[in-house]
Image (cartoon, rainbow over all chains, first blue to last red; front, side):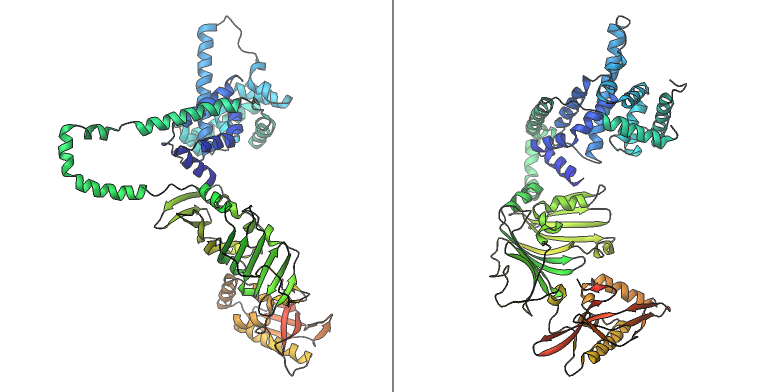
Length: 181
Length: 403
């Protein structure tokens, strides 16, 4: 916490070393969030790249009110959501029925995670509605509280908690081979 | 899958923890190069960007009216500039400054051991001193660690006890160069830090959930000059810990010449067998001149009884070395217990004193006013000091020696 406040303070004063340290500190976490939320592996680096470039642009004006990791994770989640939507639109417009939908093996969940169980969970995660998947990843991977997620998404805590609960329920159902599949 | 917890654990352990992130060596460079470039451009743009206030002020009409308020404005500006002109401070400056430090002389207070004074000498590594001299007045001794040896020294008696535990490796000393960072991390996740410029110093305040601490840093040297615990909601938590935990540092001075021979064993020093022998001085214990050993043992138990019943701290510390370790808060707790009616009613010998391996023992019974009893066998040692015989309680058979 102390580190983050100081890093943010130094970053705001134009210290590029502070930016490098922030990147080094949270790189892996953010890449994981991106990997868990994106529908294509190629976009992982792009999302983290875009988040850091946008963050760098806020120099001198950045105000840290909560945790830096939480802030950056939300940025990654937003960016991943936009990218997924764009990809979906492009597919509808230009490819439509011309090409088959991406095979499951192309999803990051399948190629990045190791082991059969991981693959199963990855596939199940990919089937969740984006907002449920986002809450699960932000809560379990970025260790964000429901309150923080709610604030960042502009919805109530109850909504976030419901999304989380429904998401887990659906995951359980898919993994158990239930009817929701 | 039974419940939500199971699925949470499964997702966390079997999926998220196993997610592999891209390991492309060039990725970091690509991201950081772009981010740094944007950051620098953005900063330049923001610095160069004229604000709307400046545009308005550049108009002819405004220039005339502005002249009228120039004097007032100048005064305001001076006060603002005076504040903003304070040199920017970053904790790294302190860490860098500490790297250059050759000696540190400081005084303060440990939670458990009370007041201290300390000399540290460094040779390049600010985290590991080559020499340490730590004086603990409450137990009348100095702890010395140097390449020549590790020992306790009592200046008054000139007694030396060689120790095996190197205090230079203890947390509070070893990371002197990382002092701020460590304190900040200890403030726990919910903590925060604020930095403010004061008259002649910079205050770095660490706000933790249980305690608030502050460093004062010299504006010129960027070195910490004091450390204080401003608020502590759970002091007993720290006091009960035996290790050296700093509560306050009243002052810190740098690069001063340490007194001659402070890290050396004096040539005429007397080596003692036990750690507690070093705690003893001529003001301790009960004068046992003219008494037999048994009589002296009985007399000290009698005197101890009176001090326990009255909660006479000075006498307790004088007669029994184990009480020297009590922090003021522990005495306060005992006082409060006494006021609340929980007190020692009796401390009586239940058998005759006897000698074993050079130490004397008196079987006793401690009785509280609540009817509870406890067997306590004070361990007594006799010393010859300044021509007098002293009888001192150095521990108990049940609790061991003062250490």
